[in-house]
Image (tube, rainbow, N blue to C red):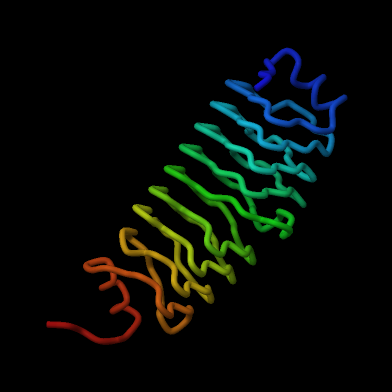
Amino acid sequence: MEQLNQSDIQSAVTYEDYFEDQEFSQLDFSDIDFNGNTFDGCSFLHCTFNGTSLSYLTFRSCKFEQCTLIVTPLEKTTIDDCIFTECKIMGLSFAACSSFSFSPSFDSCILDSTVFSQNNLKKQVFKKCLIKNCDFMNCNLSDCSFEGTSFDKTSFHEYNLAKADFSTAKNYSINPSENIIKQALFSLPEAQSFLEYLNIKIV
């Protein structure tokens, strides 16, 4: 796998449209101007994308490991079968991404103030993540796995949570009358959070 360094990255994305099986390690993309590039099977390790526009780019089968993405525009960005591992993701709108083949998964990530509204996230994975101040309005979260994930100031409203796995998730707030929860998996004591929406008391 070819590895690009900081000095040649701007020239590379300006003159090359397609990158395949390349590794980008410890690079700061904050001042990089992309040009509608496609990244196929590429790895981004310890990279920074603070304020970097990734709009109109295509990421297919890519890995982002220990990267920082803060206030990163994603207008019409294609994210197809990509995994984010131990990344800090803050102030992004995945709702702006292309809906075609949208399939990200997250492992041990911090997702803060991030928007997923209207996204189809069926069967996607949020494993051991912290999901804070996030918006999943009108998302399809059916068959999703939230293994070991903790929620903070994130509520669910008008979501399809059918067959979703919350059995090891914590601190979620789900109104069972406003969401589809058929065959979803929950466990005690976290499932007691449903009681606040049922207007009953258990003594």
